[in-house]
Amino acid sequence: MRAYELMYITRPDLDEEAEKALLDRLQKIVVDGGGSVEQVDVWGRRRLAYEIAGYREGHYTVVQFQGPAGVTHELERVIRLSDDIIRHIIVLREKVA
Image (tube, rainbow, N blue to C red):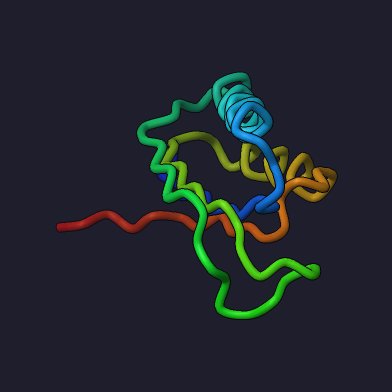
């Protein structure tokens, strides 16, 4: 399995319950795909460097997980279909010596 990091920004007008439901849904995709979630770091509401989709702020969340390559494709698909996420990135974490 490979180690990945997902960072996503959600709309600032999303309530806390919807944020939690979205995070649970993304974690379920990782676990159902044969992976495991290692760490979730909720940064909270921050000002964006530039306007994205009409928003000047967003809720940042970072999820570190391990899984097969196929799980990232499913995450990408679900994230693209979600109107709540305004920006995201999934990167392969490097091993530290």
